[in-house]
Length: 432
Ligand SMILES: Cc1cc2nc3c(=O)[nH]c(=O)nc-3n(C[C@H](O)[C@H](O)[C@H](O)COP(=O)(O)OP(=O)(O)OC[C@H]3O[C@@H](n4cnc5c(N)ncnc54)[C@H](O)[C@@H]3O)c2cc1C
Image 1 (cartoon, rainbow, N blue to C red):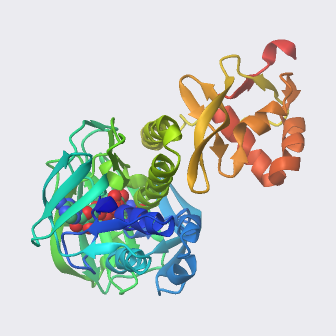
Image 2 (image 1 turned 45 degrees about the vertical axis):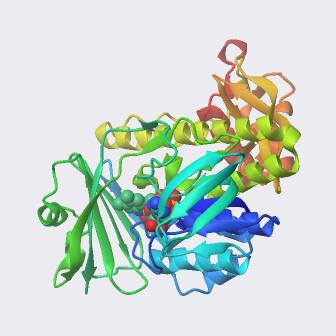
C-alpha cells in the first residue's frame, strides 16, 4: 500500500508526488495520457523559479532550452506599456510537464501512465483505486490533481468571475518580436499571445461564451494582428472554459485537491502554473505534517483551507481591479505619500496562525483583519514588521527607514504599499 496516490501528472500532481517522495513517503502517480502532450498555458511567471528550487529542479529547468521572456507588452486602459517580468519564461508545456513527471519518477514515485482513474472508494482506512490499465492501487491518502474539470471528490466550485471562454490556436511563421508576451484588452474581450520555444506562436482570445469568431477577433487586435501577416494557422482552433473557480472544501483528513482542481485563476494573471506548483508544495507539507505529527492535523487542515480561500480572494481582487482599470481608466487608488502619517488599523489583531516552515505546517504569529489572516508577504514576516510600529502613529517615510533594517529599502517600500493596499495601516489624519 502507498502512503499517497496522486491523480493527474500536470505541474501540480508531479510536483506533489516529487516533494512527497523527497520527504520519504511512498507515492503512486496516475496520468491518463502519454507525455509529452500539448497543454495551453505557456507563459510562466518568475515565481515558478523559487518553487522549482525547493525540489532541486531550478537548474534543470533553466538548462532545458525554454525561452526567457524578460518583457511583456500590455495594451490596457488605452495605453501600451512595457512591463518587466523579472524572470518570466515561455515554455513548451509538453516538455515542461514531462520534466516534472520524470523528476517525480527519479525520486521514487511509482508512475502509472497512460492510466485513467475509473473508480475509487475508501474502505477500512484505505483507498481502493481502479485504473483502466487493469491495475488497482491502494493508498492511505488521495490527492486530486486532475485539473480544472475534475469532480472526482465532489465539493462545490464557486466561480470567482463571470463565465469566460478561451479560444486559441498555434501559428507558424508569425513575427516573434523580442520574445515578449502580449496582453491586450478589447471591447468585451482580451487577448494573450506568446512566441514559443518551437518557433510557433500561441494566440488566444478570452470572451464571454458564444462569441467565438476567432480569426475575425484576432484580426481586430492591435498587438497580435501585425504579427500574423504572412503567418498560417498550424492545427485546429480550440476552445475551453477559462472561468476562474475556487473549491470551497479543498482538504479533509482523507484527501486533498491541488492545482486547478482546488483553485483555477483568471488566466490574465499568467500565474496558473505557479499557483499549481505552490499548492502542491503546501499540500506536501500538509500531508507530511498529518503523517509525521498527527497531533497537528487540525492545524495543517486549517492552514490549507484558509490558504486556498485567501489566494482565491486575493487573485479575484487583483483581476477585478485590472478589469476596472480598463473600464474606468482613472479608478486606480493613489499610492500612499511618504509624508503621510499612518498608524495600525484599529481592526487589526495579532494572532497565532498556521504556516508552512520547511516540510511542516507550524503555528506562528501573524495578523488578522476583516477575517483575512496573513503570516508572510514574500519573505517578510508581517507581524514582525508591523510590531515595529510600536502602536504609535508615524510618518510613512520614517516607517520605511525603520522597516529597511529588516527588509532592505526596496522590500520596506513594497511592504508599505502592500500594508496600505490591504488596510493593515491607515492615515492618522486626525493626529496631524
Ligand atoms: C486558455 C488558458 C491559458 C492559460 N495560460 C496560462 C499561462 O500563460 N501561464 C500559466 O501559468 N497558466 C496558464 N493557464 C493555466 C494553467 O494552464 C493551469 O493553471 C495549470 O496547467 C494547472 O496545472 P494542474 O496540474 O493543476 O492541471 P493540469 O495541467 O490541467 O493537469 C491535470 C492532469 O491530470 C490528468 N488527468 C485528468 N483526469 C485524469 C484521470 N481521471 N486520471 C488520470 N489523469 C487525469 C490530465 O491528463 C492532466 O495531465 C492557462 C489556462 C487556460 C485555460
